[in-house]
Length: 167
Image (cartoon, rainbow, N blue to C red; front, side):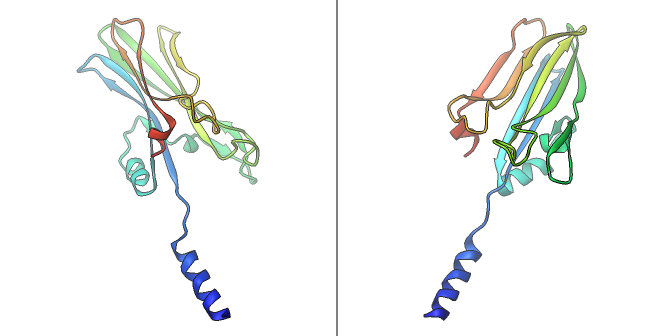
C-alpha cells in the first residue's frame, strides 16, 4: 500500500505545474496611418513566452521596469518615454509599471499592470491610469488598445472582458 501511495504521489506531482502569465505594455507609432496606438497584451505559458520573445522595441514587461529589494518588495518604478510624429505634431508617450502593492506579500503584491500617458506640446491629452483595474476585479474591462488618430481630439479605447484577456 505504501508503494502504491508513493507511486501515485510521484505521478501526480509530475503532471502538476504552475501557469505563468506574461504582459507587455507599449506603443506603436503608425505614421503611415497617421495614428498612435497604446497596447497592452497578455498570454499564458508558451504563448506568453513567444509574445515576450517577439516583442517590439516599444514594448515592455512591466516587471522589467521595477527594482525590488532582497525581500522582493518594489522599491522604485522606471518610466519609459517615447515619441511619435504624426501629421499634426509630435506626441510624447510615457509608460510606467503599476504594481498592485509595493509589498510583494500584501494584497495584490505579486500582480502588475501599467499606466500610460500621451502628451502633446507638454500637456497631457490622454491618460490610462491602469490598463487593468485591480487583481481581484474580474468585472471591469481591461484596456488593450488606445488609438489616437491625428487631428481627432478623443482617442478610441478598445477593451476586453477579464475572461477573454486571461484565456
